[in-house]
Amino acid sequence: MRAIILVGHGLGCIGMKESAEMILGKQDNLFAVPLQTEENITEYIEKLAAFCIKVKEDYSEILFLADIKGGTPAKAAALVSKQHQLPNSQLIMGYHLALVLSSCLDLQKNASGLIAETTPMIQEFSL
Image 1: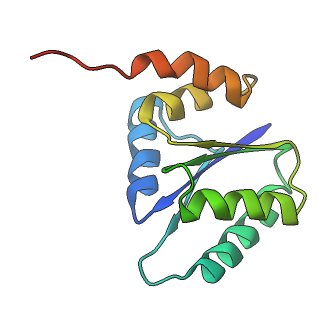
Image 2: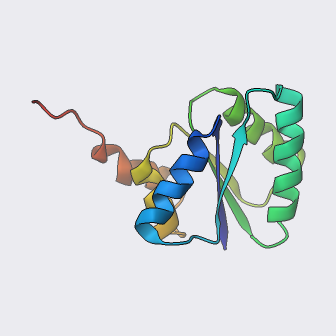
């Protein structure tokens, strides 16, 4: 089974998790690990690594969803995945609610498939 770990700056990833669960109900495989203002990158990497070590005991795959491409949480997820040889881990940078929902609903679809499915959901609406 796949664990989905939201990583991001501040409380945004916690809010994203709460929004997804408001729509879908409790998701036992959805987690949020925020980078707090008072944490430096080393502390965050250590926190994320400790969390992932626990998660990989129960899950065969990990999908990281990061808030910003190239941001500290995304870099930390990539580093932790590589250093701790996380099973079948993937990273998507630049999450939005539709992507989080699709990730929860379709645990078989890989990162590329999830991106392809949810990218058309982002569009401008003329007012």
